[in-house]
Length: 429
Image: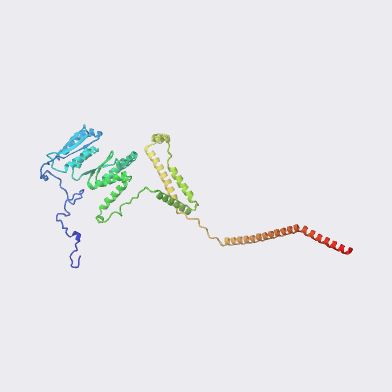
């Protein structure tokens, strides 16, 4: 609001005017993105009269569909005649064709008829394929044959779209309001335009090794969020799950491995178990080796049937109630074992480390006495060692003196002789 009290109009919306016909009481058409209902195209809407040119489409069908198409072709012709479309089934060349006639009044119906014969060729039942002629219905044929090179991998991923007992496919159909058929190298989908985008995304992601359950979970959350009118103008990213990729680089794998080793070391230190990093790493490697199966060219031995095992154990002759009771007891025992094991694993991290207790007064006195005694012993030992050293020195000196004695005696004897000889010579003179 401005100071004068007039409402401030955004420049981008200055030329927009209120639409008197666009009110809340209009009969809105839910599957369509348009804000109001689209009325069906009638012969009165075609003011120009019959078409000047003939339009036609043809498609091939596989050999195994020939029998079914021959049986239901009368129903196909009846459905197309109502819209003024002619159709032919060529069994020699294995093709179906549709074309406009003088009675055709809807210019878009020929494209719908083309989609119908495409769906019939891809394995869709005629009762379902006829629904494509409705205005709100569209179809999409997704080619998946060239997305995966390995045949076994392709079959596994295609089966993943269907799921166990068709549960995944049923979930996709319920959440998207589409009919989905997985056949050969294609996936045929029928439904509203917006939902077909979701189906295509789920199928292509599944062939890229992203499980459909992630997209199904996201669709379920979106469905619940759409019910809340407060969240209509807000971003839903904070509510949607963020799934990370499972494929890791070599550096990321080594980093994760190191993290696991460190966690194990911390847990064991906390529990008071002394181990080295190398030992923990060796344990992890051995555990991984144990999981890997060794390849052998020979087929495995034939496993015994359930009936054979039951006959061996004697369960076969028990009543149904007794058998079920025994199975329940086994299951319960197994659950108790696993819970105990997990509880012990969780408790490993919470084990208090062994702390050294403070020494008492008596222990302190004893330790002091022991220290003093050790000091005295040390001093006595050092004194004895010194004495031994002195003794060794003395003995060495004495030995030296003994060795030097003969030379000294000889010198003294020679001096005495000289003196005696000198004295004797003086007396003679």
